Length: 120
Ligand code: AMP
Ligand code: ZN
Image (cartoon, rainbow, N blue to C red; front, side, top):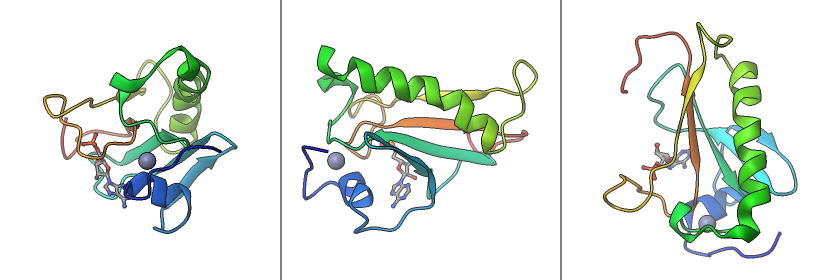
């Protein structure tokens, strides 16, 4: 694992300096439950390497992003989302201020579970 930003909240979670409720981990990717869930299931999938947002993504990130997207439905199914098509889940990537991004370390929100949801 290469780049980290010492001031970044999610880099601190990757390094274990801030605790998280882990959903999944491998050499390049971490998933953990959102601290303020919108729905019965709400976790975040992040690359361990610090990338500020989707706006900074280049061809060199295509592999890890592809793996994150492919993991989303599997982890959703393992964490409370009912099967597609009755169930399913939502994947969101907020990007920049207008996109509603608050934490500037690229993350996929994976949201699901039985409705009603608190938000969305
Ligand atoms: P965004 O607005 O897309 O940047 O989303 C940031 C998300 O990170 C929000 O849904 C927060 O609830 C979540 N969050 C902030 N701090 C933590 C934390 N320490 N552990 C888990 N999730 C967090
Ligand atoms: Zn970071």
